[in-house]
Length: 398
Image (cartoon, rainbow, N blue to C red; front, side):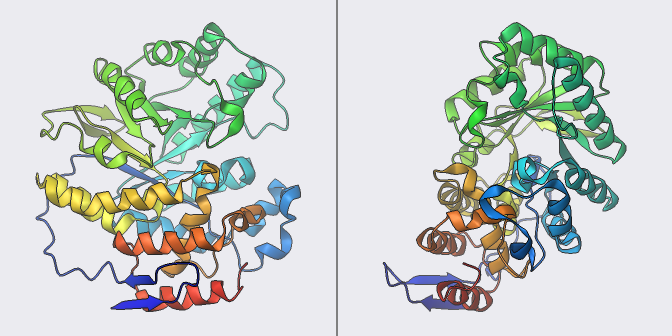
């Protein structure tokens, strides 16, 4: 089905059912890339009435605003297309959500017992205030243990306190060493750029990242790169490969080529928990964009698994173009495009985000998101999506 919608400000909006392609599915094969979808949270229909907007919502408010059934059903949807879940990350509005709701996300995700597994962010947001490095280390270690008890792999979230305290390279090394030594493996590191959280400017000063990765490669299995810097990721990936560590790309602008890599078939593997992960001159993935393009991106990875690089590009390159629009500056608003696409596909009854930051993306941006989602094959039912776009154009949910 193909549907045209009027667009007063530009070219017509064409929506097409992407999941009804007549192209044959690739043959089943073992995955050659591990991919985790950083999943957003779905709010209750009345959440807008209980959020106080710019003033922010408290942790107690946030946990009551989440529609837990829909949120968990959405994670099962992502897993059904071959993706692990990256839980309680920035995509789930972790910095607005607070620890009580984040912990519930982690534990409920664990209870789903997904075959594709899950990774979750370990931070220190159970503390009302972090006053010194000892408190910081103890808090992160506590969250690492909670994640592992729930059945997940912990990824150590960036710690804004290190920027606030103007820590130098040696202090980063000492703090991370303490966390690593007090934690069971495996764990991963997370490098999140200031385009996602402004106060992280200057994170991992000097050669601190590489020195931290050197501490215990058997325990620290790699790093998730969310710097939107293609060349930087290649350099980090080269040095990680020397230690048999992996890079999970978080680059929503360049992930297609970063995941493809040199295009050679992996011949080695490295452990990640109870799994053996193929390794080579390529990145694996932990991406927010996969939240919205699970259907076509899953298809792309199945083509790659059978060595069909052209098929991989044919499906994944439009997903990347969609990601470039959703993550355009101001980048931290990308969750609005993800929730909007989820709503168009019927996974939720409204496209709201905590503190209504969805309102910070204008209608023209969202219409472009819809158009590119359709071109990527990420619109499941064009008729339903068209009805919802017409509602938004009429001012509903705005």
